[in-house]
Image (cartoon, rainbow, N blue to C red; front, side, top):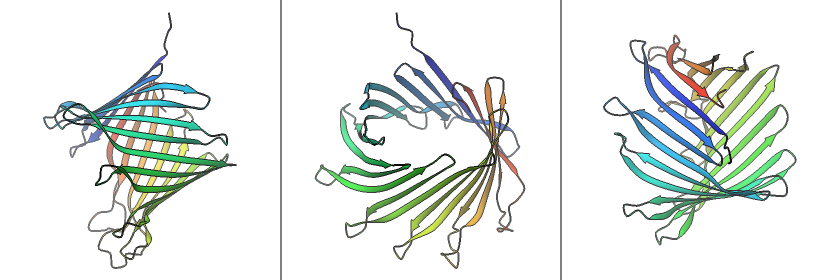
Length: 301
């Protein structure tokens, strides 16, 4: 008789209504047993009841020193919780001799007849040197002829050491002439110092002149509490449409204050937000409680 280790986690999210009352917004649960992981997400339906939004089951088909093969079945539901499309994903991961991991993800979508058609394929080729991993990602979709064509490319560079990390991802998409051009770049940096972690993510989007310009930025300050939970302050900067100078630095549009605390077998997370008012767009307003997240079970942090 073989006993399989089972771990489970349930996360419930609440929002705060106009009267300051806590309202159930959604939830998801994750159950892992042996080489199978099942996840189900629920949300409020149009009639106010909890209804399934998406469920997935992931199973490790094979695994050895050279890599592994994973199959994932994803089921989606409509606004009333009725079953909708089914998606099958096959993930093949290969461990390279330099310590990096390359992969091929094939995505099949079901039709009304119950058969599956290849809808996307994502190929990632990675190399590693020291603390830096470079990856080339190719996204393919069926073209007019039905054969797969490259629709998007990404270049990723991840650098890590003991106290810091950086991720630089540039996305290339086809322009009107069919040539690949820079469409998006996201640069993230993280640094640990004196018990606090600072995270900075900048997003660059293509402007009318074809160049990438800073469109938004997120700066987070994370502090570990004595009980192992975290306190996080997040500043969100965005470019405001219609500004006279579109090249101006993004403006502070929101500050989130996220506090975690442990209570018995639960992890409670509250979110307070500050936003500018219409009458004073250059100054953050009073804090408002946005919602709460409750995590129970294994893996809650």
